[in-house]
Image (cartoon, rainbow, N blue to C red; front, side, top):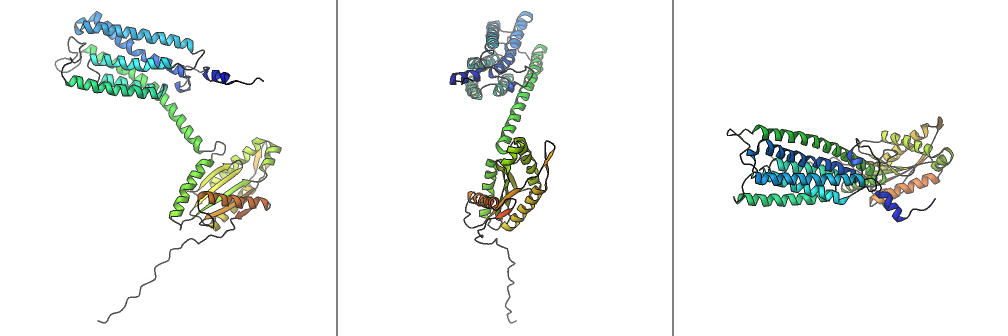
Length: 415
């Protein structure tokens, strides 16, 4: 089989992946997400350009033609540009999975057109702001978030400029209108009202698409968080998360020495032999069925994790060495008594246990505690397996026991 070069690997990464257009957009390639985004942006010039055209034809007395006609030309040109880019993207998607220029055009042209049309109609603080916020919401889910942030900064600056300019009183408010779109009693003219209703309906549909995309993003985020803390096979805490929790509990035990903390290391005996003779699926079955047995014997505030390979670890806050040894012995008996079915055949396993505790001699950090438990486990395996060995070093001091204060004898004074 020929080896792949770096160029081959880069080209394979850029190759588009097949997907269903009815699936979640976050599962699509980057260029396909941009095509969807452009399709939604396409609605802005189509809707507002269409409204301008109809108003110029049917009710031109409402509009300032010197502004309305150039505005209609702007929407028509914007519509044409977006349509051309979409057609080019549909061709490019067969060969590449991304197109940064297309992304830039979508983001910054949308900001420019929405600002211009909303300022001319006097709706930049209401409808225009809503369009920009929905656009940012949608684009954040489907495009490069860094470009969205840059566009956001541009929007903030422009709003500041508009605020200063309008406060000066030198600019006409809503210059595209020849007459106010509101009646004397404050109610909107029916055409203006119809425009807003249609616009809200379109925004509701676009928002739904954004919610579905965000839902997928949240699911992925939750999955990533779970993968970073949970072992995928046994569903126990993974090694990194176990150590982090152990560090926190150990720090608490140092602050409050009366509580103490113990650790049990567990290793499945002859695990390699199980994999070699029965197959790796048998080894996986042993691990999977042993994990809930360990969890069932733990307290709510104990931590049970897969430490690596066939090795497990149990953290027991507020537990002495003697009690932790008793817990380990009960676990050893339960593991030895369980029957694991693999391919319809019963498999029996045993495990070796090492137990250590803080406070204890030579145990100053969580690493010392884990090493002490691991050293005890090593002794258990070399002593014949299927047994519990506690750290031989005696604690430097026993856990303190609160005593009732001695009664104070009061002196009797003569009356």
